[in-house]
Length: 299
Image 1 (cartoon, rainbow, N blue to C red):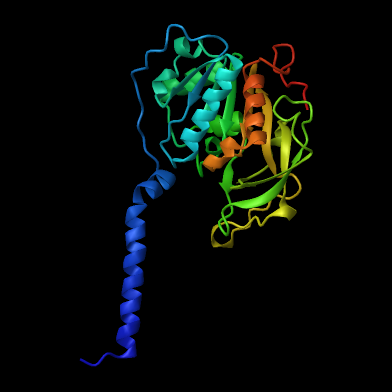
Image 2: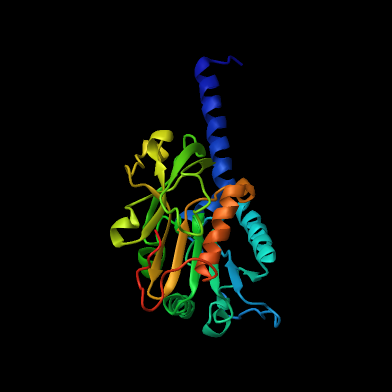
């Protein structure tokens, strides 16, 4: 049988297509979760420990969207260590039914550890909103503000404050420089003025600064390439926020876009920043968001 160049090329193309198809099939669950999302809601809350000390932190890591498989357990371990060192109570869960008024009242702050997708039913959404607006603390980490779309407008428009639009892909992880603005905040007061680290750098549709949110760290776009998929331009200009806080009624709300990789939760400066952010959200350090001071003071 005579083998022609045309047959060889067709064979190469066929093999390449099979490889692509195999990869698509292998990653199909992740692709579905990212672009479509699951709609799984728990209705039976867990039994909380009777001896949970105060202050207490609720760590939530449910994902109905993209799941940070390596970052979530690394962050959970770090958060448990922080709580142990501080003498705080801590409870880890992926059960959305924990978000009910009675159980939320046992916690001083809620930490969203790379939460993604539509994770709550209507009652659970309302419970979280009432908790925060009534004075509870909230800390969102990385993927908790990284969904391409949100089914719950209040969460994106108010609690996080902005819409995620993408991150670099070529390469995905780059070294870049963060410039710290909030030198008095418990989360950032011990950080260097210029913080160089490697990350999957998020971009957003706009900076929440215009809404009155307090920006603690911005990304220097001259130190990395803000190009996304299909050469998408993800540049935001001089005001490219990465860490910020605001008062949501009487509640203290904090968001950090840092923390895609598991290694991030072993970085001393990143760990220190999260430690201070939790202390602030739980009203163990810093000021702001009291009934008489709805917009806060710290910069």
